[in-house]
Length: 313
Image (tube, rainbow, N blue to C red; front, side, top):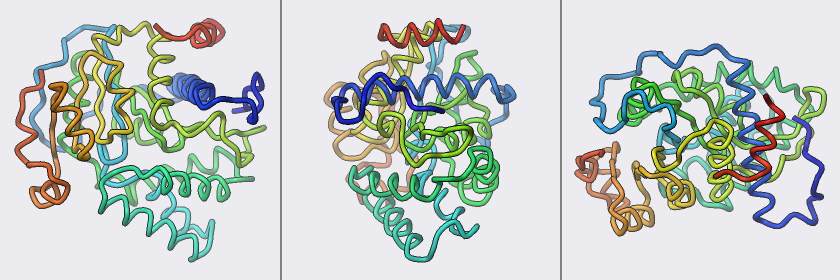
């Protein structure tokens, strides 16, 4: 995807970059749903109880799921890096960096901005000059090798409940949109909103469109998608483990804290948001979250996004 040229990098404010990243993610996500087969009815991978919440037949409601540590254990970009190393895309020194980042993520259970930026910069330098189609093909293999066995069955069941109710379900993640799209398709979800790397004639340039889809940028992506698809955000649900996603969670009428970090847990309890924890009791205790936290009952877009949707139609 070519970069949008209406603002130069030096003149973009943080808000403008978030809006640009969000709208680019929404555009890429909608495009991917047109190019890939519809498998929204796929069976869930694992038997787990489903909630009563999703209202059957409410097409103006949708569900938005963070990926890392919410749907999948660990961070998708780190698993992707392991797969690229196996295919000799980079050397052992870079693998050590990926391994350290993954270890930190698993111990801390949160997205540290410095670690995530380091991983992003590493990934951009690695894919620069490669074709998008090549990375998509490799991504399918990497999913089977490193990601498929790391999907939380409980969160997968929540997503399936929304699908069974006839609602769209989207991943919203800082991971590359191509990787996120593969994961969404393999799980039978509607689509994915992810970080958009610039490409020219199908070749990665090593730059981003906007900024990583993280924090406020996720909220902008959800706003843009809601405007394009005519969702009523008050009837939508969002799921995340990280306090970084409070902007996205605050957009919807049904926010859920899944495997929450300590900051999100405190915020969720203060606002009476629903919490669920699918980690083991030992892991939950490590970060100060009782395993029993998961037994509680589940109970307009920017003008640019509107213009984007009109152009698409």
